[in-house]
Structure formats: C-alpha cells, structure tokens
Length: 492
Picture 1 (cartoon, rainbow, N blue to C red):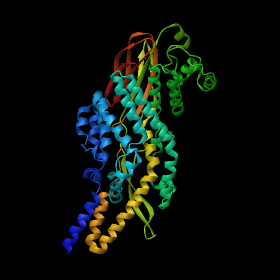
Picture 2 (picture 1 turned 120 degrees about the horizontal axis):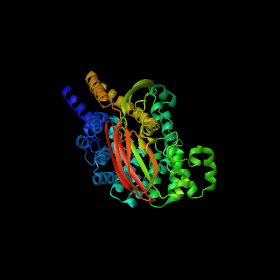
Picture 3 (picture 1 turned 45 degrees about the vertical axis):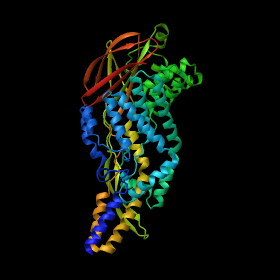
Picture 4 (picture 1 turned 30 degrees about the vertical axis):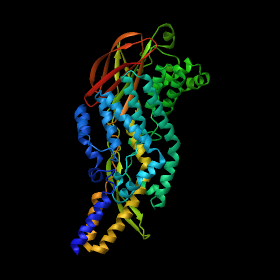
C-alpha cells in the first residue's frame, strides 16, 4: 500500500512539475538561467564569441526560453561580425513577438504554462521580452542592415524601436498600478515588500522607467539625418535629450538642427538652458574636451562631414536569486511567514571611463547615452509586485498539495512534498544577459577626406582611419569588453 502511494505521489509531483515541459525544459525549471549562462559570458568577456555561441544552451522552438536564446545568439553573432545570421535570428524573434501580441493566441497558449508555473516556478512560463530589450533588438537589427549598406532597412528597424517605446509609455502606468493592487489583494503591501527586498537604488540610478532608451532615439536621429529627414532627426534628438538631458553631444545636435530648421521658439528655450560654449558655437577643442567640432561660422564657410562614434562597454549583470520572508494569508485566513525566491540585480554600477579620442593634439571624450543596467534594474523593480503575487499564489497552492499528501501519506507524503517544494522554488533569473552595460556617444566635424585618429578605451590604444564625405555621416561602432576592443566603420 505504501509503495503504491509513493509511486502515485512521485508521479503526481513530476507530472505537475513537468506539465509545462512542452514549453519548458527540465533544466530551465530546476536550475538557474544565470548559472547556465556563466560560461557563455566568460567567453564573451574574453572576446571569444565563437566559443560563447557554442556554449549557449540549445532549446527547441516550443521552449519558453527559445526567444531569449535567439537574442543571446544574435547578439554574439553581431559581435562576431556574422551580420546576416544575426539579422535572421533577430528577425525570427521579432516574428514571435508579433505573434505573442495577438491576445487570442496568448490566452490559448498560456493555459498550460500558468498551471505549470503555479506548482513549479516562473521559469515554466514563456519569457516575455521586456520593452528595453525589444528596443535594443531593433537597434542591433538596424546596425546589421547598415553593415550591409541598407539604410532603408535600418530605418524600418529604428521606427520599430521607437514604436516599442511609445507602446511602453502608454501601457506602463496602468500595468504598474494593476500589479500593485493585485499584490495588495494577496495581503502583501508595497511597504512590506520594500522592507524585505534588497534595494537596487544604486543600480537604477536616476532613470524614471525601464523602457525609455535615449540611445535608440539618438541612433534614430543619426539615421534620419543620413536619409535627409532633418525634421524627424530633430524630433528624436529632442526625445534623447529629454531622457538624458546632461549629454553634451545630444545638446549640440539639438542646437545645431534647431538653428538649421529655424525653430525659433526652441532656440530661445535652449539658449537659456545650454552652456555658452554650445549656443555661441566655440571652436574645436575647448577646455572641457567635448566634441563641439567646427564652429557654426566655420561650418558655413568650409565643407564638412561628421564622425559619429557609438561606444559599447562591458556586459550587463545577470539577475541573482535572493530569498526573503514575508507574512502571507493562507487559504485558511491565518498568517504564516513564507520564504520567497525572487530575482534581483546587484546594487552597484561599474565605472566606465569611456572613449578618449585624440586628433591633431586635442582630446575629445565620449559621454554616456544609456545605462542598460539601470533600465534592467528599474524594469525588474516595476515587475516585482506581479512577481510576488504569482509567488504568493504558488506558495499557497504548494502548501495545499503538501497538506493533502501529508494526510494521505503521513510523514513520507509530507517529506516528498516538502522536497519537491524546495527543489522547485527557483527565482526566474532570465534576461538578455549578453547586452552591453553602458553605451557612450561622441560626434565631431571633419573636413572631407581621409582622417586618422587615436582612440583610447580601457587603456587600449589604437589608430583608426576613416573616410569623411562632404555633408554625410561616417558611423563607427566600437565595442570594448574587458581587454577586447573592436570597431567597424560605415559611411552613411
């Protein structure tokens, strides 16, 4: 009789835990995504992108983490200059995102996932790509098109990146309010959670939300200028300025186009807001080392083109798992303290010195345009009420199962259920973990022709040669990960 009960109990537990295996692998349910990606990120840190690609765990298309694996691969392929393969993988992710946004399909496909998640963990659900990751998907896809000299394809992707941010802006406040209300309905207050959950305030920094990305707007402005669409470029430079108001390069571009487009009202506002060395058009190489470039007067007299440098630095931190104890109302209306396994980011930000560029005895310094680590931490903070609510539902369901097995199987049933509950209590640490940590920008004017500059980043110096065409932009994408550096030059 006891053997029959043991077999039945084990069968039930395994069936419950693996009921989502059509969309989730065993390793994803019972191991940590962060741990699965450690060797991948170590190879990426060394600049060994082929090895990193080989180490990305294989997943079937039906697996809930499949899209995330494609993102990791596409990013590594981008770093390895495999632009066509990267483009294909990003395009496949985008198709899946579009399909998932159809409400009927979401409801139909989520049933078994939600059941599995209730009695296992959030890793049983399909990975929903956060808005900041979606905007980076389209930004990289735009760069993939540019590497193949397809400006029109790049513009399509950059418009998609902007649509993602507009959609997020509309949905954010209501989603945040609803998730906080649902958590409160489960007996967990925001204050109670805040008192127990480790702070991420340093990692979040000054960002207002987890989806507005000044880098994608700035890249959009650069591409619109290259396409001769100055008004569209001006709009997106202003959006980048709104998100990152202290970036002097963005200020310069906004001021330049405001004057070029005769935006008189804006000119008066920015004249009060920007420093004199921007509004008065000081010459190249002023005391702060910013990339003011050739003055307005000189621009009118001499033909010129522009160098735009996009600088990616480091690798974004992975989520960690942390356990906190919270008082939770059970189905019997009594309060018990339960341990919740939750994801978090380390509460720190790395310091990056950025790019130092030397030209004709003068030095110019890049400036940060986005801190992806901060966006990721803010996104997770905003998601936490919904994560906790699911955890509470899960804990109560698991406790009911444990009590039933205890009544039917005594100590053995209780022990089996307890072991399963402990083994399956895993935080969802999935995130696009091969992204850069920080992105800087630098912009300068040059006379048409071939130029040579010295670039210094992380102590690594290199001489870079590029071509400037009159009235056009030359784009350099620079990647710096540890001691690895690589650049690509594209004439727009």
